[in-house]
Amino acid sequence: MLQHMNEINPNDQINMYPPTRFMGSKNKLLSSIWAATEDLHFNSVLDLFSGSGAVGYMYKCHGKAVACNDYMAMAATFSKAMIENNSVRLNEEAINKILSSGDNTDHFVADTFSGLYFSDEDNNLIDNIRHNISMLDDPYEKAIAMTALIRAIMKKRPRGIFTYTGNRYDDGRKDLRKSLEQLFREAAVAVNEAVFDNRKVNLSSWHDSLDLDLPHYDLIYMDPPYYTPKSDNEYVRRYHFVEGLARNWDGVEIQENTKTKKFKSYPTPFSTLSGAEEAFDHLFEKYKSSILVISYSSNSQPDKEQMLRILSKYKNNVRVTPVEHTYSFGTTKNVKRNNVQEYIFVGY
Ligand SMILES: C[S@@+](CC[C@H](N)C(=O)[O-])C[C@H]1O[C@@H](n2cnc3c(N)ncnc32)[C@H](O)[C@@H]1O
Image 1 (cartoon, protein in one colour):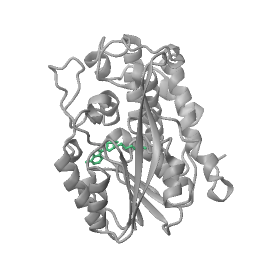
Image 2 (tube, rainbow, N blue to C red):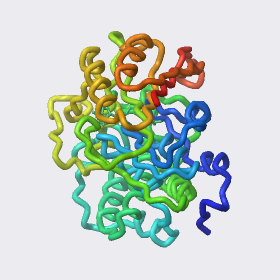
Image 3 (cartoon, protein in one colour):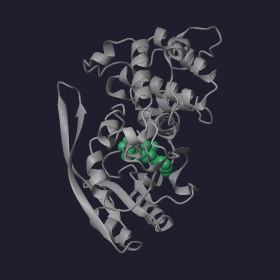
């Protein structure tokens, strides 16, 4: 049974969002982001860099009309399945059909990525699932199935990333021992369970945030890649395989000379300091009639003072909430932690 907004408890519903390892995901900061904004009056939210979709979903659970945007097809697929979609679920028959084998696959994954990330058997199953998803008519069923496939593949991959080939980072997780079919079934159930109706029209959008053109939203949440001179914040480099799946490699060219068979990263101003400063200024000006909420980290640039200066050009009231946050990376046996403060800037 689908639940409706007047029957749900926002905090219980937020926990229904399938947990994610997406880089920079704010799933551990959702209550802080809500606490930083709940006193303000707003009915609609635009999550401009939605990534895993966790923040947009949190606001959907609080009854807001939500639009999620990201320039990655995989992110737009997640938000189509679980944010824009208020009612469609994938039933067991459909899941079985998607997993059934057929002769019509294009063998693209099996041919292109042979020996790189998964066994031949798994590559063939991925091709089958891709083909069967392409035969579905309903755009939300398609999005649920593709979200489930991406989630299953990320779980089957040590560290969940595609910057290396082979299996050298096997971290002993139980998921790595499960079959791809089982992971797909589990993911489809988890995605299904996240679907609910908040009685609002919600939207998924797949665009560059800098030239997005949507009607007015009361609150704009911005969580772009964090720029630091020392580390790279490249999403496509890490996730090219699942991003390729989400867009069926349409419109991208695989760099055949690379070992990983990745394609070119999408350009973003957030890969340089001057680019990030200009982009923030541009976005704050463009959305100055809305409440502006920005997540940024204390070890990134522009720094806190610069951000406050840019935000104050367009907003009379500016406040910042620091939240202690630990990013973990490494294997389960050898976890390294990086303590930073996450800032939540609010201009209103
Ligand atoms: C820090 S992550 C967002 C994480 C998200 N808030 C979450 O909780 O999962 C940054 C996102 O910005 C996206 N991105 C980077 N540059 C972009 C651009 N110019 N337009 C749209 N999205 C962009 C990336 O694809 C990535 O998903």
